Each structure stands twice: as structure tokens, then as C-alpha cells.
Length: 160
Image (cartoon, rainbow, N blue to C red; front, side, top):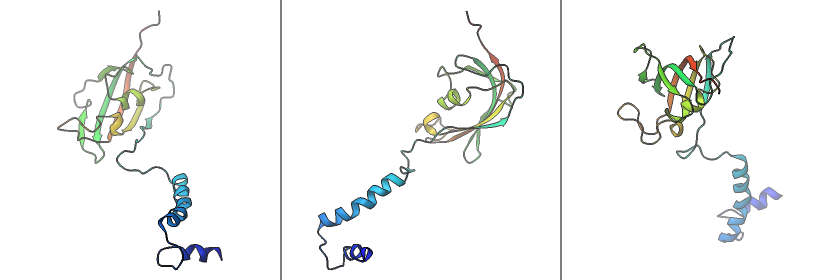
């Protein structure tokens, strides 16, 4: 049968075990593996930004977009739950212009299309956060960041 001949061609059998023959027999399974299996989930893997809506807003007349000034409350944690920063205890919202590189890329991307009063949870991979360098001493290199954010106010310059 077919299975027996294939099995007979592995090391220890009496058939031709030249390196070329072995390579030919390994090639189809390796090709199949490459097609079926996703790329390795190792260090070089690019993970995606995850956005979860924690509180929706029913009446939403304006959604955040690039160049809007946003007033946010946020709490930032590492994956293990360690809090590294929060605007909430300070009582002063964090204000910045969206989409202009004033904040990490995970924020510039993850806060688009938000409504005033909406709350989101952002899980930000290092590539969209502080990367391999981190932000010592509180944020180690390669850290995935978890932010709970609330959009308090959108300021938009009127179009001319």
C-alpha cells in the first residue's frame, strides 16, 4: 500500500536514504505546513490594536476624527494589571489633538470615531505603544498597554 512505501523510506529502512530523496519526501509536508499554519507567534509578530466599547452613547451627533482636540480621562495599566498612569485622580482631563503624533499610535488609531461620553478599552501592542525602549521606569520595553479611556469633550475647529 502507499502508506507502507512512504514509511519504508524514512531513516532505518532499507530503501534509498540519500539526502536528496529525504528532501523530496519532506518537501510536500513542509509546503502544506506553510500554507495551513499561520506565521510563528514569536517575538517578531505584529499584534493588532484591540478596541472594546465599554459604554456606548445613544445620541451621538459628532464622532472624533483627525485634528479634533480631545479631552479624555484615562487609566493606563500593564498586562499584569499594574497601573502606570491615570488622569482620574488628578481630576484634570488629558487634552491633545488626535492624529497628529502627540500621543502613541495606539491612541491616534484607537480613539477615532468616538462619541462624547463613550468609554473604550484599548489593548495596545508595543509597536503602537512605547516599543522596545518602553518608558522607564514605569513601562518596560516590549510592554503591551491596556487603557480604559473616556471621551469627555470633542473640540473641532469650524471649517472655513
